[in-house]
Length: 132
Image (cartoon, rainbow, N blue to C red; front, side):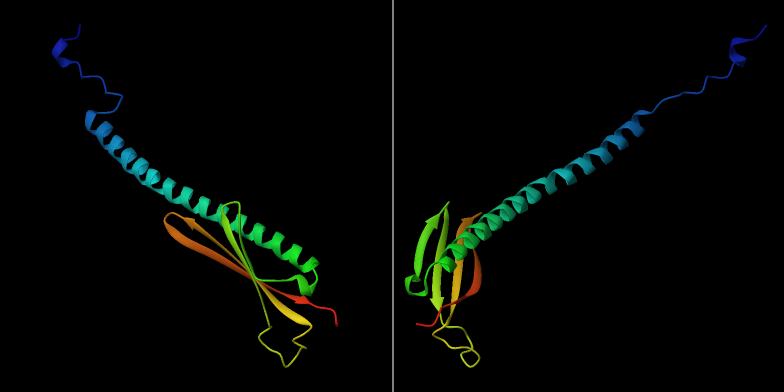
């Protein structure tokens, strides 16, 4: 017969309270860190969306202006989908290589406000005008 005092205690299988507190602290640090990244990612996503919209508006405008005759091209400023679009017609930077009457520089600038800051994208292309 065994004596009750001679029995060894069974091995505890489980976590102690201190191990649980440490695990929760590590988990909390990881969650707080990841929660701080989400707003920055969302802001970058919105900025990227607005830049894509600006590029699409500028591309459509440039394509429609390239279809017009050179005599109809003028400087304009309009608002499209909350974006301010300014088009400017100018002479190309180098007139030595081309006839300035036959080649025009077309600049489309798109501006918008986002997160309290003014943002802008500028696109430049060249339009060939037929001889008059």
